[in-house]
Length: 84
Length: 290
Ligand code: SF4
Ligand code: SF4
Image 1: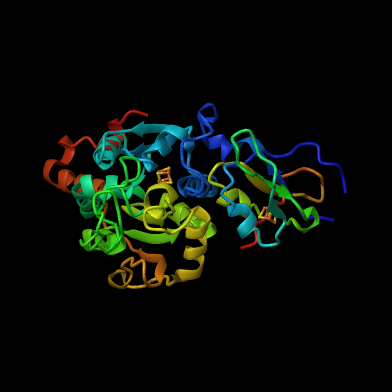
Image 2 (image 1 turned 180 degrees about the horizontal axis):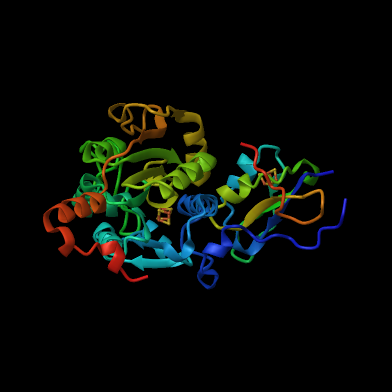
């Protein structure tokens, strides 16, 4: 079971590729599809590998992606200790 | 495993004027990445957001003040620090952060920077250094590396650039760090430390400008710059700032270089005036507006 999940706001993306490159567990890939601005947004290729570390969210210059931990009690954001 | 009912929102959004997003920064520009780190630092430092003011000058980074949903002030070119000085002196309870670019802070605003550092005014200075004047058309800046091409140095820059951490330390800054936009966790931590520190703090962020610096210098896109930072950066906390000059052909030294204490401007001012005026002196902190 994945420890985290990632949300992508496709229309905000400018296709820089930072998230795909720097996700430590290679959860993401750039899609061959275009968004309405003509950029290739990322999509999730390996959801089970997401730790919710939110490195993608810290890298994204366009605020278009972010990760979050899936807590054991089902409520997000409560036991989200970051690992360094 | 219980079903998730709510997907949390992007932590940076609470600090953004969402009606102005998408922003104008180019694809692969690093300024937005620095804003993510700043948002995390605001959360972690637990500063009172009603007592935070963001001041920017002019430039691509100068737009940060306009995108942040905090009390913010987009000032004239190079004059972010004078405006910030006025804010801080008039209302010392404010945490005043200057968020601007290398051209704005170190060319036009260079004198303001050294004097605010000398006085040890309690400000946080965040400088996104893209090695060029970007918004105005890619002109040479006091941070442009030797031999780099810019719109005003078509045969290569021949002026040596400033070593910003050394300049900050020599002028009197009490906190000096440099990171690149690759170092998001470290950068967020430094921003948090600077927010929680009293005195003049300076953080330099080496950041990609694919449009105006890298294209002319054949350095690829934003992601190429990020990979370059990853490969060429060496973390040396506490390194003497005389040894950290930025040189595009050698290692990029990053880390926290200075963390010291000096009396602040307001502290020495109160001390001096109280000594001379005694009872007659009404401390500005007691009369400031809230
Ligand atoms: S949250 Fe972390 S693990 Fe998940 S996609 Fe983002 S960077 Fe990868
Ligand atoms: S010109 Fe350079 S610094 Fe300005 S938004 Fe574009 S990439 Fe960023």
